[in-house]
Image 1 (spheres, rainbow over the protein chains, first blue to last red):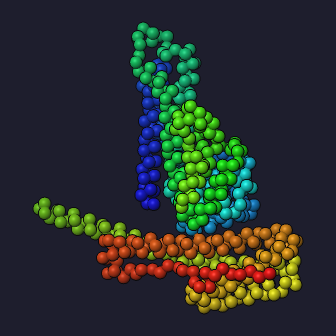
Image 2 (image 1 turned 60 degrees about the horizontal axis):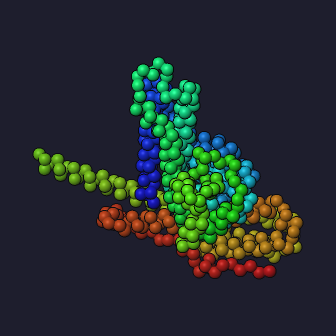
Image 3 (image 1 turned 90 degrees about the vertical axis):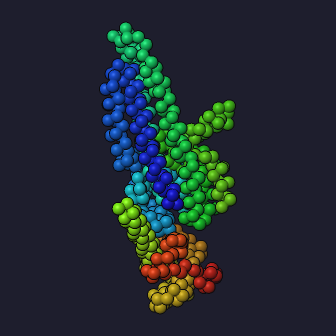
Length: 301
Length: 184
């Protein structure tokens, strides 16, 4: 368990470094494409540094705000609070903040940077559709994310993937604004700039790389959290039947966005095209292993 | 000169290792104590909830005197029980059985079953029973982690010298192993 935790801490450092590299590269690309030169690189580096800092301290509140989560009142959500408290006793964790999202689709996620600064959010649909034992299984899954420091890596990923998307979007728009040309009028005489071409390719590829990073970060730890959840509750059937209910429920989680997709217990977007000719390509971007696989694994416990 | 530095380095490393290993043992031993007191906290919490429940049920099913008295008696017995694991375990178990019977009353009295207060108390007591079980589980997990550390090489050498002792697991006693029966 401890090896897992330290490997997760290492991975979040790698994620931050990788993000800074991507952003600097994008900055260089923007600079080359818009004729701003190395100023672009400098600006992008500053932006990257600020964003890395903000995402460490604030990514949990961002993820909660994006999903429109409201704090759950202990009076109104007695059962939810009780279950979380009980599981925290079992795991020897401090009690995280508990949030509720008004959404009929059953789903849940955990966020924060360490167990002392953590939050769990569940949708009202989850509270309605699952019984006590199933809800306990889902909450144990989320608490395992907190305990294994998965939350740090994934919430960092939310802000960072968002930032890369934002930057490349801006860059591409800047180019339109520049008349769709690769360089300014005055640069015409300078001849062909090979860096500009590389930059253009980078702008297109960067968001895809960021997406694939997000997906690989996410998939393995879902399975892992399922197993550690059963270590907490000592009752795999609870989580199994909860996952079965999630599988059979087809409501789309509207509170989820592409950036927060990997946070949730069930992949919020439907996996359209998973079976077609491009199936294996699409799977690269799935943030979760198929629910059937997860259920089968838990049955073996 | 170099030999001296090498010896010094080895000594420093050994001392560092001892400090880390010793602190690890202390941390785990304190966690066991914390876990043990957590069990008591949860058991007490349950005792505190019982009078409320009895009052609520009385308003709807006053003539179920026997069931109500059984609960009160079980609670008093649990408070009076000597502070040994066996006696406490038995008394608490009796209370669990008596409480099950009260909640079974909910089936016979629809008004009671619909009462918000009754439902809230039922939820609260179920949660507390879960917490008792979870705190015992955490206690045993803590003991496992401590014992593992204690008996592993090379900690085992100095742990004996410093009087670190193996801890026992919490085990459900005979009375707790047979689930309480509910009679109608």
